[in-house]
Length: 110
Image (cartoon, rainbow, N blue to C red; front, side):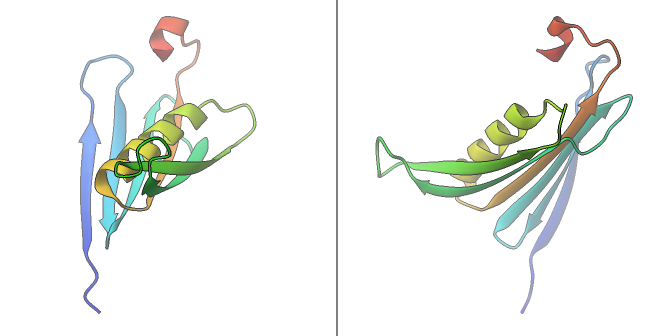
């Protein structure tokens, strides 16, 4: 067996509320870790797999299952990212995220 393993690091550089991501292609699948802020951590995990769209079966969509630790809010982020990547790549995708800034405003969250 000749496994395929490719790793890429991504970082935003806006100067405020920057995020980092580690993206690993493991065979046909994708593993993504997203973090940022003053206290990076694991707050939520999503696992997605591609499937035919319910509305248009000839189009690929994806379904995700999400685990979010209590009092964390990364669930929407990991679900959205995992479903988009899974549908576009036609692969199983796992995304984890943990982002925390103290006293973050509503504007900062967006």
